[in-house]
Structure formats: structure tokens, C-alpha cells
Image 1 (cartoon, rainbow, N blue to C red):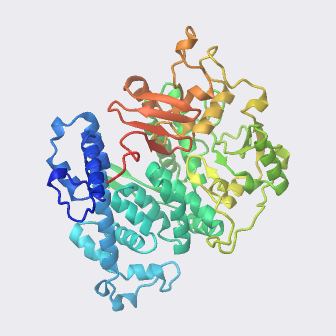
Image 2: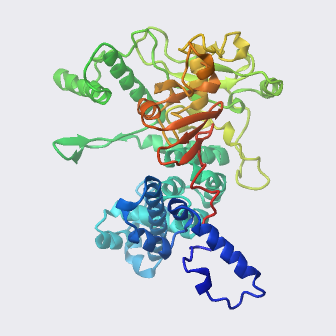
Length: 556
């Protein structure tokens, strides 16, 4: 059922319940629901009038902490339901004859092709203007709403239904719909089938990466064509006014170039902070860019020979950009078979990094990381496969999401881009597993993890291990989940993969001083208990499983 009926069992009509078995089952269901705490009741109530009425009637000041958390979650489900209704209504409106005047369709064309395409048909629809006036929104906001409405009303019905039920919220639904707005409906359906089942346990950012990975896996050839079209649209926007004499600009372009800029700015800021600069990291990043602009205006040309802030760390190590590439994209069949054999024998893989920048050039070092068990000389940069003609048919190859390359700090990239980043590089083998002969578990003899151990943990965790945090692991601190104690080993945790996890500075403080309890139930799997008693598990793949107030209480 879609809502909980709070009417007392004895007041309910009994007509049509047959021999009373259904009535007894209903009584047990309602009695069990009423025995739950208020917070659990809210978590189990579906989107509908009952939930809204109950929320509006609640006294927030008299509610306990756990109930307040569930009030926020319940209101978020209602907002998702309202978003679904709003989008669907906008989609239906856009199909009405009054919103598609023929005279406008005759004069509108696609700006890129100059032809009357689907893009032109969208521009010929006046529903965004109709809604913009009514809602006081911009035309682009209403155009996005109409586009999402058309999707959830046609081939992405599953996403629309999950949004209406509140199983996924507005941010998650937009991560799916906005990413699939411009792809063929067959591909969009195949991608939805891949990502929707796990969408509730993923953040919006994680789900956006899941969709990007599935798009590449479903149709890699078309993904490369879309990437090329987007590369041609690279830009830096003109300034947008913000309050208090500030402004903002947006950079859009190839991920590798944007990440290179980010890496350089972060390295400069980190080096300056190490040297005692009192500015914040964000201020230093901005000032590094502003220095380039100031020098360009002073000299009359853009492109100074050096930045005002150094890029190299004080220890001489240069920052890295990593690309994790599946074996299938880099190795010939013989090497892949050797890798499978090694994996089956229980041998751990090695980490390969490729340095594209020659040492001593002063530029940020770019590196590709490949998790692979095999000899380095077997690597090939030639693709061992060709994209299928129809990747979404039942007769085509199975969709392999794990075979999609991953650019650390960005997300999935096409095989062609991964090979381009790797081409011409110098490969170095850095083994961070038992094959190296180095000790990964340092026990209670050493607090600070060795470099191989730190690399291993960061590669495993990828991001901060607080559920939902997207801070890159390479910028996080390594925390002993169970506090390390050299004097009393029995009371403390060891310096080992099973007791280390990546935590950003803020979440490290929250764990240590904020009454958040963390247990590493398995290497890379972290169970968190918040001060309100809510429990969550951060899985190895970065997804979040609710251990309380969650799916084990069936939504009604």
C-alpha cells in the first residue's frame, strides 16, 4: 500500500475481508507499525497526503534528534514526489498543440547543423516560456524541466516512478535524466537498467559517474563521438555577478586539461601552505590564477614563463593525475589470459604508473594507474576489440562496467581517451602487495604507514570513507579506525589495511571529536553510527547501505 492508515483497527470496515484472515493480517501490520518509534514510522511511510499531514502537525521543538533526522528525510521524499509530478505535467504540456505553433517550427533550426532536427523541435516548443512566466524561473530552467518531463513520461518511466515514490530524490533523478537527455532511447533504456537498481544507495555524484560509465560500456563508439563534440564546446564563461563585489566564472573542457589545471593550483597552494603562507588553500588557488591574469595585463601577452607559486612539494615529489584502466583496454588476449590465471591463483595485482612529463620540467606529473597482475612488457596500447554495431541488442556482448577506464578526480572516460593519455609515456612498476616482499601490516610497531601501505589503502578507498563524502583519498588523512596503541596492543588497532581508512580533515575531526562511531567490519568496509543512533555502512564500492531506518523497514 502507498500510505499508512492511522485509523484504529476496531474502527475499520470489515466488509470484503472474507473469513477474517486478511483482517487479522492487517491488524498485525498496523499493530507492528504502531509499536515503532516515531522516527521509524516516518521512515516507513510512503509519499502521500498522510505523510504530509503528519509532518505539518508535528512539533519540531518536542521531537527528539532521531525523529528530526527522519522529518528531513521524509520531507525530501515528498519533494521528490512533487518534482516527479511537476516534471510529468511539464512534459505533457509540451506535447500540446498550443505549445507547438507551426509558424515557429518553420523558422527554427539547429544552430549546429542548420537543419530542423530534434534540437530544433525542442526550441520550437513554447512550454518553457509559458512556465517561465508562471513560475518566475528562467527559460533554461523551464526547458530543463520540460526535457526531464518528456523523459520520465516516455522511455525512462522507471526513473520517474522511483522519483514519485521518493526512493530516489531530485538530485539523483537529475543525475540520470540530464545525462541521458541527448542519447538514443535504446541506449538510455539500457543505461537505466544498469544504474537504477543501485541508485538509492549512491550519492548524486556517484550516480552521475555510474551513468557515464554505463554509457561508455553500452556504446563506446558513440561515447567517443559525444566526447569529441563536447571537447569542441570547451569554454570559459564570462563573469557572473555575485553579492558583495564578487563574481564567478565557469571552466568547461576536456577532463584531463581541467584536472591538470586543478592539480597545478592545488600543488601551488599546498607548497605555499607548507612554507608558512597564512592564506587559505582556496585563496591561494584563486591567487595563483589571478597572478597569471595580472602578469598578462602588465606584459601585454598571456602565458608567463613561471607561476608566482611553486608547483613542486618540499619533498621534491610532484603531483600526479591517475587513470585506472581496465586490463581489457590495454592488453592483448594472451596477457589478459595470464592476468586471469594470476587472479585465480590468489596472487595480488601490481600498480603501474605512467609518467608523461619528463622529470625536472617543473610541470605537474600526469600518471596512469593500471591495476594488473602480469609483466609490464606485455602492455599494449592498441585496443584488442571493436565496438559492436548494435550494443544494446540481446545478441551483443554483455555490458562490462568494470572494463571502463576511470580518470581519478573525474570519473569514467572512453578507451580512446585513456589510450591517448597513456601513449608515449614512461611506465614504472610500483608493487604495493605481498609480491613486493614489503610488509603491509605494520602491527603495533609503527604508527605511520609505509608508502606502499598508504598507496594500497588510498587506491582501495578512492574517496573519504564517510558515507557520501567525495573528497579524493589522495588528499585525505589515513586514520586508524580502531585507535593505535603501542603501549597496550590489545587495547588498540594495528597499522594495517584492515584498520586504516582515508578520512578528509573535517570527517577525521567528526570521527575523533564529534561522537560519530566507526567500525571497519571488513577491509575497506566501514560502519558508521551517528549521534542520533542512525547506522550506515560505507561499502567498498563507495555506495551507502542504511543499517537503520532503511530498507529493512518495508515502505508502506
